[in-house]
Length: 396
Ligand SMILES: *Cc1c(COP(=O)(O)O)cnc(C)c1O
Image 1 (tube, rainbow, N blue to C red):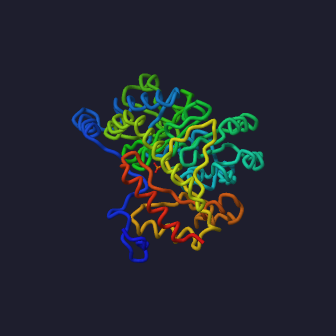
Image 2 (tube, rainbow, N blue to C red):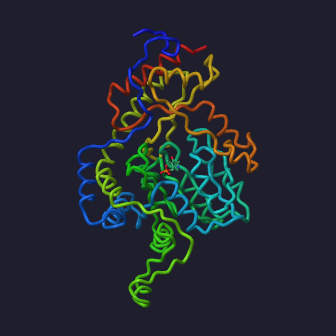
Image 3 (tube, rainbow, N blue to C red):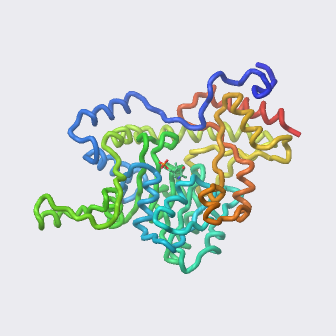
């Protein structure tokens, strides 16, 4: 193994690219999907309900409503929260664009509140300073898998009568003050995209403790057609009422068959994610050139992402060069996230760069390392070795 960086023509640390996230599929998943394919139902049937029940139990919520993806989950929660044009919804700029987009689908105004430098989660003090008479809701995103300051955020919600939506696309299996993510906010939304904790191909799910709101979500995902069976009886069996403008956001029984077998493995996968994160933190705490993730004592991260922060003042190069050098070593590093208001769509709406100084300065130094439960010990060592190799080569 040569010490010359692969980007300069040296031998890469590994032969094949190690992705930053990847699904884990085994024979039990294939069997579970096969059973559904051979049954009477392919779309919304008994397996959808079974998956929803198991998911609700797992996170300790009364209800879980599945939808076609995590973005649809956010959109459904925003719709049922009654967001309309002119309403303001506060969220973080350090997230996937879908979080903010879900507000725009209903014509709401997105108000970005800056994050805190330690956790990179939305700052409750910033939230409170941005509340106006138009504010209707907050969407808190559990960045990288660490829950937000949910107690402070729920208190703000109570004080100003706001709906609290927790975007938990990163935090299935995380806890806050020993409470499960999914049981705390008015709505908690999850994604089952292949890079997330469990997958259904594409998929999303919303948990809530309100049966009424769960029924409204079920109506919304099915074209706005009401579920009320009494009404069908009243008119005749073929009658149904489309009461509001919903969507076809249904998840299928085929996908939920996969979801059910994936859920059984969540516990062991969370353990492996934590184990890998611990190995990384132990290795990188020796390296002054980076800061390791900061996890607060009263919460457990579910480790969707492992986000290193480069100490750029100690390096000869910027994050882009480090990123490219690691990719050349076949380590599939990534960046989470480009600040959402920087995207052309949001720039065209008039958002001004520089308005979220912590998010925007931390963005320049974040780098996500590969982290998924199927990674072998050799994969983990490769990431550490390559990161040391590249950073030492670029140290001032
Ligand atoms: C993945 C993700 C989503 C969207 O989920 P999809 O299932 O891909 O639609 C939303 N918010 C965050 C923070 C995500 O990471």
